[in-house]
Image (cartoon, rainbow, N blue to C red; front, side, top):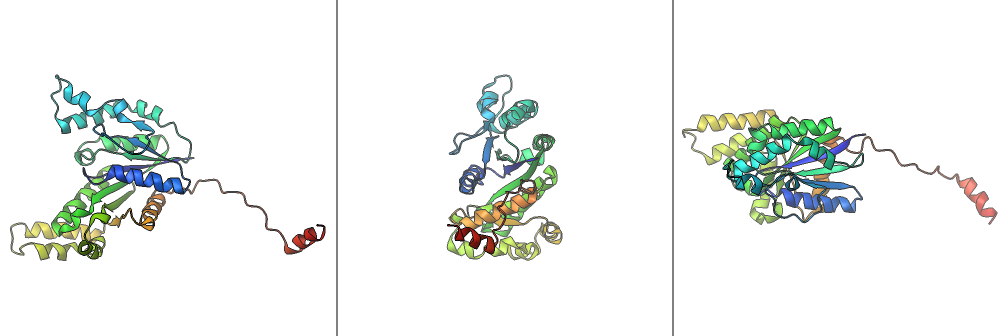
Length: 277
């Protein structure tokens, strides 16, 4: 029977660790077994227990303090992830979990790991070879709803990640609880956006990049490739809805053994039994 995994990805500051914490607590209420694996070698703190932590294999300080490497923060992080890719047997040993268990991989926020460097694609292939069904949860800060150009930028980043990872993909708008009331009223505009009209409202129709903006908007609109699911941690139904979408994407629960149910008692048999009491 398969195991299940979410790659929790997205730009730095989009709330990936908070997302993992909230999902773990929500699943505890549902009596679902969920583990978290930290894959961010620069992580400093998280408020949930981890099944495994990449920092036990290598951390960002190891790479940056090596005088022969001369890495900065970004280069050091890429080096750490490539080091993980060359030591996948370590990760396999860490993922000694029961069948049907569910793992959240809290991933780094450097977007080039998903768009330019093959390390995350290699991780996906390894997980699939270990009989995991994998889905990406791409988190985008709701502050990208401030204007259409930022939203299109975030949508293109999500699309690039989808194309490169080639796995089921759910895009999530986080930090909705931090939006102002005025911004919340406009949220539907971004959940089912008409990007062409949105961009034309905000840019000079005779501007230098008018044709480019229009082409990008048509790409996202015409193929309906990118949609976002709003996530509000103050609303339990919001968390339940998102989890259901991801479960459907990876077919979670379809291979679970059905619970045995007692045969229904015939009313006449119940009366006969009561007559002997």
